[in-house]
Image (cartoon, rainbow, N blue to C red; front, side):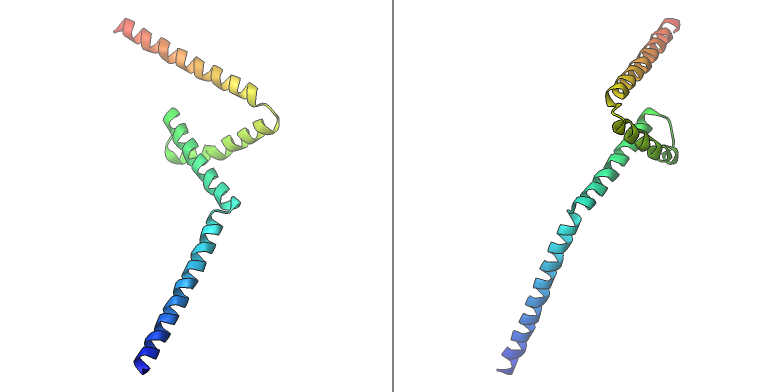
Length: 114
């Protein structure tokens, strides 16, 4: 009988530890999916994506590209606050088109001379 009582007490303690672990896991999930943490992770992902895009366009090493991102984010924030998004998109598209045309012209002039 004494053996059964010891095993029963052990099982009760294991159950309490299991329930405590479940409560802790639930609290951790609620914390991880809180609005602040989700926004922090999303902002970090956007910064990483912007850094990768910037590095693919400009021949910068990683540290210089990442050092430019705060300025780029401040500029983007300023543009959105001042309701200059449509003009900024127009300027950006014009710049992309100009770069494309310059590269196309250089590519075609290289074919002619070669």
